[in-house]
Amino acid sequence: MRLKELTLVSNKKEFAKQNNLNVMNVPVIDKVTVNIGLGKFREDKEALKNIKKEVELVFGQSPKWTASKKSISGFKLREGQLVGYCLTLRGKRMWDFLERLIKVSLPRLRDFDGISIKKFDNQGNLTMGITDQTIFTEIKPDEIKQNWGMSITLTMKNADNRELVMSYLKQVGFIFKEGE
Image (cartoon, rainbow, N blue to C red; front, side, top):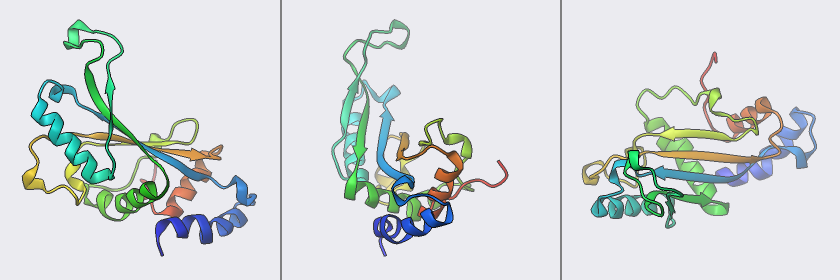
């Protein structure tokens, strides 16, 4: 059974019953936001083209480029200059990406023993940083020219209680570090 059907249909009622909640108050993943900072690659047009192509391969949609809001001479940055890519995943693409992330990509991380519980913010959203894009199977390691990282944020609905969100995400398939 696919991850979406498993979490939204069959396990939602059981989770609500276990935690004495209404089915409508169960935490749900609303969207996944991905931010990619370009840093040292922002001057290299070939690198920008390669990074955009790899992002399209991994996430299945074209990213939106983000521009700097003001000039900072210390960073050699001008207003309106490209500083990164961002994209938002919802619906089918979000669930497909989460399934690949949980079952294939995160276990491929070197020395992965779970996600730290310190990665949650006060609203119950989970933000994790990935420093190497080669964990995704769509990218062939011998074809990459630049190594770039990303920040992945899972935005939750009905995320009032951090422990409740953690138990929901464990049920979805995320692994968290023990003893933190």
